[in-house]
Amino acid sequence: MEEVKGVVKHILLAKFKDETTPDKIEELIKGYANLVNLIEPMKAFQWGKDVSIENLHQGFTHVFESTFESTEGIAEYIAHPAHVEFANLFLPSLEKVIVFDYKPTIVLC
Image 1 (cartoon, rainbow, N blue to C red):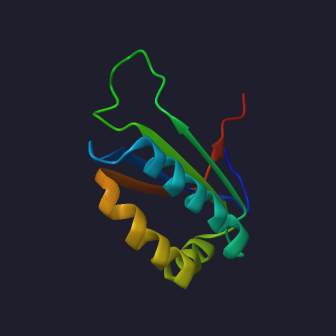
Image 2: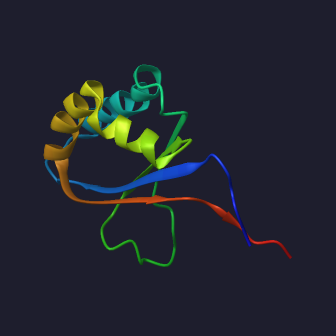
């Protein structure tokens, strides 16, 4: 196994509150995606909705993945005023959230 150099993933699993409208969710997703244009250490952003047939999502409906070059980059992102401002808009719309950071590892066969 080999750790991928210069890549750290920041994963956020979210369950929006029932009263959060689809239009509000779309607005929040666009705001999240725009952070990649405002915060230099954030290199890429992807998101998606749960499509699993296993029903093991524990209520989480959306996943957001940001890519950074280092854990220091994530720390800079978290402290950045644009992130802080966005988090103050985003988090109140969530019923529950999990955040997980990891360095991808390739399995060599």
